[in-house]
Image (cartoon, rainbow, N blue to C red; front, top):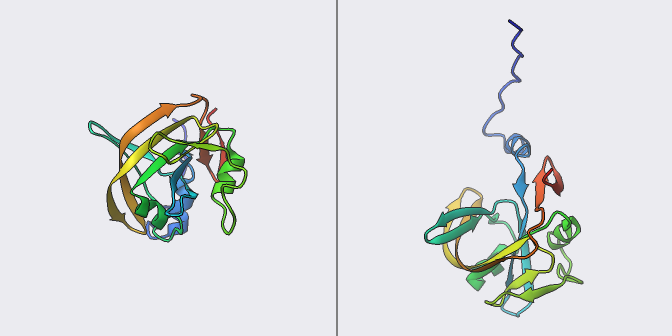
Length: 169
């Protein structure tokens, strides 16, 4: 019998940075959540927390930080479009997550059948009506009822893993 490898010491569950580092070992898909503000200007939030919730009824969800400056605009609109970013859209991802700038400068998009931005070049999009919001620590859990959807390119999605944007190998 071989020797058993010694396990690293356990981290404190109360250490937020340690938890963030640990979760970085788990790859997540990257989506742009879009809507139009009351001024009819496009708004976007980048999330790595998008998930399928239910097929019957068709529900999806994501978790925005309550400290986000974009989340109140999305919340007020009562609807949103989930844009599943493609592996080739890391530059767009960075632009849409920027602060203090026109995030949509030079960004090509068209309205979904319900009017919110579908970004050019995405893998797929899902348009939702806001169904429910629940508090979840320093985030909210947003539940959306699917109203319309389409696969655009069917290509590889953009993923976030260990602090880096990339593609599924």
